[in-house]
Image (cartoon, rainbow, N blue to C red; front, side, top):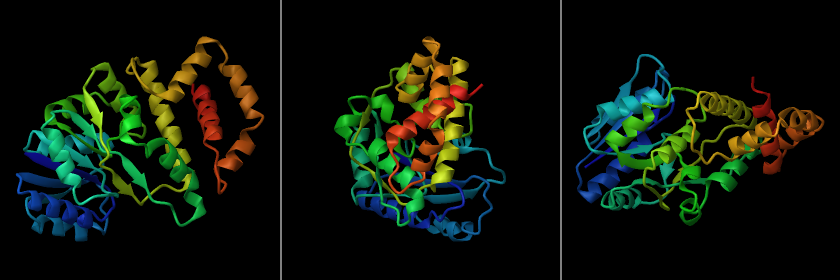
Length: 291
């Protein structure tokens, strides 16, 4: 019926697995839950070993770090069912019907994305990631379905095993930003997808400086794939803006003008109320300077 796959890294997965096991048992379906820690050698894995005592559940510790995409491929390889549900370890189902909602989607035969809800951080140092997630990622399914490939997230989705393996195998970079590449491949292949309101709660978000560092890595990944012609059709807004500037030979002009204000922009991004338009300018400035 369904394989529930949870990529892990230095995180206590036990509460999440207990929740999903309970939901699966209530539905009386054939299921398995597999968690693979990607070589973190974390002390939290002592708790995670208890997962092996739960119904149809396994926790596996990799002996080396193989990267985010390869860990997902390994999870898929070890799964036994045709339908795979991926859910990130640092999230939590927002509903007791979370699993049932996805089982209903299986009958439609479509790859389905459930969405996310961001919990407000207690400290100001996380404001940029929270605001970006709240405004750009926590989006109602009606809006997401109008531009379906723009809102792709591997954090919380279900799909057929053969398709997922085929798509993930085309993603070569093990860094951040691969959800953009994931969406681009799905769009190129014209894969029928649907967005539903079946979100997970995100409690563990990045501090501002870490989020900006990951943003740089994601942009590096996007430009690298674009220049290798690995992104042909896409819904990546920041890449579309870059392509326009590049086609008009305006990259240098934009960089010189935006550099006049870059320190003020950076100060805003670390403030209590970061401006997402300025964050877009910051990202565009960075992507135009990648050699």
